[in-house]
Image (cartoon, rainbow, N blue to C red; front, side, top):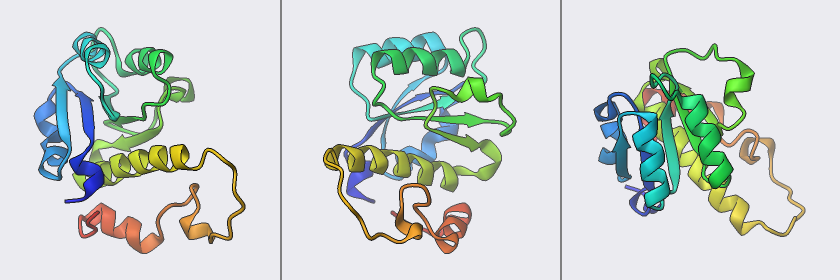
Length: 158
């Protein structure tokens, strides 16, 4: 279990939050809501480090919920979970990452880990610095191909 997960609370807004239990098994504290209205209420009532949000929620869909969250706290990362990746770009303007359910729980775990680390890194790097980092460790490409393969098959541990 990593220290980032052990100290992070995720608000999971999902029609079936039990599908996200893998995140809890890997050290994240979960606050769950089965619909958008309940999710927004929980978001306003307690601090969370990131949001895992289902795209199809019914009356108040994930796009609307993401937009509302970003208006209140734009720094909170949102990972949207969807049945497929063919979503209009306008629906993703308030989303930090997109994960297809078919990618599996390990990919969702890696994506949550990444957005939380990116937030921490951004906070630590308030002053711009020159860097000699290689492309593989740049913010645009944080993992090598081998690491991405390990994420997809569940062999990578954070």
